[in-house]
Image (cartoon, rainbow, N blue to C red; front, top):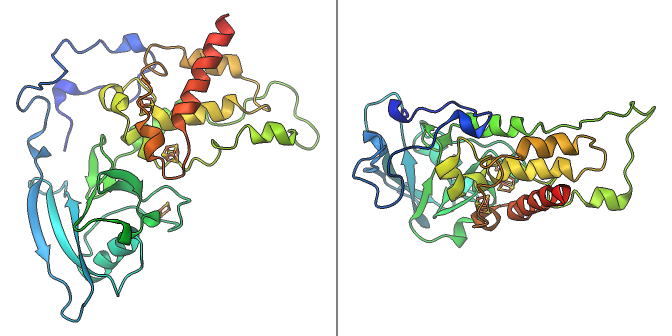
Length: 289
Ligand code: SF4
Ligand code: SF4
Ligand code: FES
C-alpha cells in the first residue's frame, strides 16, 4: 500500500521544524476515507481445509497482502494439523508454508526469541511467533503483521524507518579518552546498570504498539530507539552523555512519549522501555538544574 502523495514525509526528520504540523483535522472522528489507501480494507480470503488424516485441528486466520497484485489485503483461514507441527505459532506458520501455501511470507531466523525477526500481531498483541504457545490462544488464532508500518508482503513489515531511527541514536560506544592497552573496564555494579536494557533484540513490538509513534512516527523516535539511547547513556564507558542528550532535546524525539506504557506491556523480552524513557527525561531535568 503506497503512502498517498499528500502525506509523503521525509524518511528521517533531523529537527522538528523541518515538518510543519498538519493543518488538517487529525483527531477522531476521522472523516470517512481520510488518508486511507483504498487497499486498506481487509477482505475475507480463502479457506484451506485440514489434511484428511488430521484429528487435532486449529484454525489460523492469517493476513495476506501481495503488493504485486491489485487486490486488497485478505484474511486467509488455514486449518492446521496440531499433531504435525510444533507447539509455537511460528511452528504453525512454518507448517502452513511447507504443506499448504508456500507463498506465505514471514520473517524468522533463530526460533528461540533471540533475533527479533518473527515479531507480529498475534490475537491482538505484538509478540514473537516463536515464543507464543498455540495452546494459549483462542480459536481462530488471528495473525496480522506489526501495525503502523507499510507491508512488503503478508506478515513482513517495512522496518526501514525504524532502523533509520535506531541509527540516529548512534548505538555504539563514543569515547574521548585514549584507548587503553587492553580493554575499557567496568565495575560489576556499573555493568549491572545495563541489565534490563542490553537484552533488547530490536523486534519493534513496542514501537509498533505505541500510539504516540503511530501519530508522530516521523519525529518521535519511539520506545525501541529510546530504550537503546538509554542503554548507551547508562553505560559508564560511554563519554558522549551531553551530546546524546543534546540530540534528544527536542519537542518530538523524546517528549512525545506520554507514558501510556503500551510498550512495556507488549515487550516479549519483559523489558521496560517506559522506564528507560523516564530515566532519559530525569537526566534531562538534572542537567538543567
Ligand atoms: S510509554 Fe511512551 S513510548 Fe511507551 S507506548 Fe507509551 S507513549 Fe509510547
Ligand atoms: S524493548 Fe522489547 S519490544 Fe521493544 S524492541 Fe526491545 S525487545 Fe522488542
Ligand atoms: S525467530 Fe528469532 S525471535 Fe523468533
